[in-house]
Length: 272
Image (cartoon, helix red, strand yellow):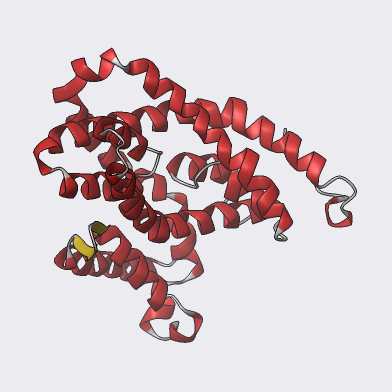
């Protein structure tokens, strides 16, 4: 990676962060539902638009150079570490209350297998092959990104699958959670249950969901943030073991069954 191109990348990243933070959290009201748009969503949208092929000229070509793209993908996981520290700070004040219902947090981890059981067949049905390995191992967040990166590299078809899901989840996942959580609240679901369900392993989705819930029930802000953060922490921790020891082997087994006899997969091998 050229030094000058790396400097351009840093300048560009700081500019995008500044603009996104200036835009700030935006809430759009649709009837009785509030859709929350985080600064992260605006940052992703800006970088996606400016990264279009026909715009990659001059300065932008240097920013989106192959070296910069590989560097950003390789060290993306490090950016998430301060976010994990923030989760811990939100959990601490409610730790006693959270420990009393700890078993429920454990049960929800079984939901991580849904992306393999449901998502893999659908992905193969619409024509994906090796990309489906990265796209359906989980919801495509930091844990799956790190696992696929280490096992297959982000330049592989599996890597493209998980990266695609990461971007899609950041853009549309946050919007979906912003809408879905208030709808369930209006149907009578308990605020604690919805706050726990917000922690699916995605910082952006958890933030969008919990922010929408806080907008609906502001007097329970501390409870919502504590439960959502605890769930997020547990999902990030236990979800890793669920992914490695349950989801990945199950995915390999199902992938072999569904692609049996597929000529395009005749010479393909899944890593042990």
